[in-house]
Image 1 (cartoon, rainbow, N blue to C red):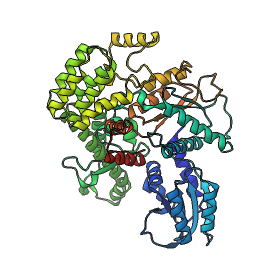
Image 2: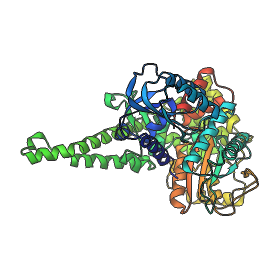
Image 3: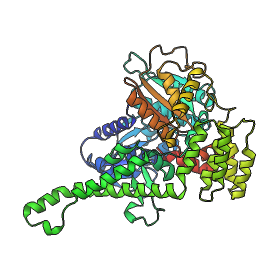
Image 4: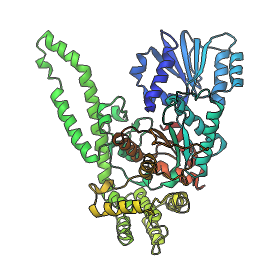
Length: 555
């Protein structure tokens, strides 16, 4: 179950269906992001797509000699743009594809606008990913569209389980089920022996995972630099060259990145060194060595490969160098060790001492100081000797902004004991207590990676058939009798790259089980805290617009 591959195949089919010849790809803001994630520009050029345009652009030229492939979301705005386009067509033939179901009434309006009969085909290609946090009607509809699109792209008609403690999970589950029932012909796929399963969860059940600093390559990049549609903005890096102000990290097109996604920072440093040494060995000799035609031919033949390798080396050395600078500057190894202790251990006496000590260190950033207090607040929310008021005073003395201080209470309101449906902090069943006891007894291999997301235990219990129906009921009367094989997990409020690593390891270590992870966004600490402020009603208008912008851009 590879969502990226499924999307790529659908887009390929869309392009090939328009026949041979030069083509224009006409998209909206969000479908542009979809295409850019799964295709490089050189790849799509090989399919005779030579021009990329936005449907909302007012400056497009008329090109009657070209056919156009329109790939759009079925929104009212896009339908209106398309009506205007068809009334005054700029291209010879239109192949129109929507990323989800469009109503018959809108099809009729488009047909009436096509007075010059330039439309050759209209189809719905279900590809879209989900967005949204609070269930305003538009957001619920948006997220339902995204989930059903992915199900259709993967050709899955699943049974649905949801997190009972979250009303949002139940409403989304019911909304998805309603679409499956209404469009039953679209979901009439070949039956499998064990039906696929869609599990809908809520981020508020585990507010700890998105607050932790990360130490694997992909997760570190997103936490410290930010990943947006596989792109990293390095323009603020001291002394950065013009060519490296924005770089692309894509596992589809970058072998080094694909091989190192889930490795820890120490291993990345070693592999960067090996990459550099390999580059030195393969580097073409100086021009004085080009003494014959065969020397020149060999240089020309090897140059593209050398140039590509040169770009890969420069990119990753720059990224890893900046990560290393930030780790040192912000004392992140010290901070992370305390974070892990707060997340995994239950020693209040030691916790209050180490948190207070770090809060007094002027080199600790404001964000890191606040997140330590947040983790303390979540861990020892109801401890009889809690020093949270005192820690809040320490933040105030440090000069931490009022907005950041308000985030501490907002996080507890968002994902505290009263909200959670799980035993995130203190396990109550015998198996969990025993596992925690032995983990504490034998220690851990790496103090910076002790933590495992709640998702790990949830999926482990699901695969073993032990996930409680009382906490994660099925929608409807049916239930699975056998171990699930195809599992799609969706987290309202966003997933994290630490959870992606958990799913990767479960897929690798559990033969016969295939898991796909999705969410309303991919969170790092900053984006998660924006989400928390929005969800708890403590955000300003500018915060809301930033969150909306992030949801519409990030994949």
